[in-house]
Amino acid sequence: MESLYKSETGKAEILNLYNQKLKDLNINYRYHEIETAFGKTNVIVTGDSSKPPILVVHGSNGCAPIALETYSGLESHFQIFAVDVLAQPNKSVETRLSMKNDDYGKWLHEVIDNLELKNATLAGFSFGGLVILKTLEFKDNNIKEVFLTAPAYIANGNPLKALFKVFIPMKRYMKSKKIKYVERFLNQLFTEKDDFALQFLSKVFLHFTMDFTPVPVINRREANSIKTPITLITAKNDLMFPGAKMIKRANRIFPSLKKTVLLEQSKHVQNKIDNKRIVNLICDDFE
Image 1 (cartoon, helix red, strand yellow):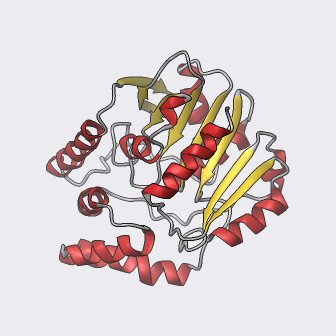
Image 2 (cartoon, rainbow, N blue to C red):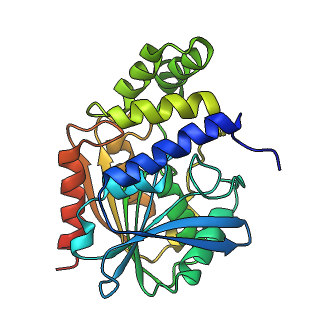
């Protein structure tokens, strides 16, 4: 299989940033490498094993340390399992799964079963939300509840806006290597400035082969089949997956929708205040 990394040097630079982010979190953790039918999957495990399990899933072009930072504070109520999604710039294998079938669902259930998690809670952001919904589509037994933040796969934004405000700046950076284009990209998607995202994505855009496949949306029949309680957190100013539009559709198609939250001041990627609000929402549910 041809590597998704364009060079060994680029791969090393990306994984060095992965390691640095994990170090900066200043947590006790262990790696758990899992063999699945789709290849080796890396999971970072942290927290008290006597607490209920929660599995967190990062977004597109991301990694487990970013998810651990996003959901910082969950360790007060859970043992946390942060998974490196396949074919992303992280420590899992580079096998690219299809968003059009149930491969993501099969894969994540293999991970959950291998970890021997019982009645697990799942939380995911953006593309991680798609992975979780695919998991519920495949089968939703052994999953207690899910929390989706600005998830892909429910309602997409205006493709022309995404083209001009997100994808063209990305392509201009890849051609010119001028950091101002990454900053323009981040300004459209991030609620607050994120220095690590600037470092990490400037390397990913240059050195990693990204998946530009259009994101599908779940159909009503599949959504109706899901029985697991869903809490949906959306962002009002989300260019990729508009919050109000998503809540409107989710209310129509998910019989198991438990709660919706619209973050009024948020773009696609939340700031630290809203991340804390999301963590508190998850923890309060388990009081």
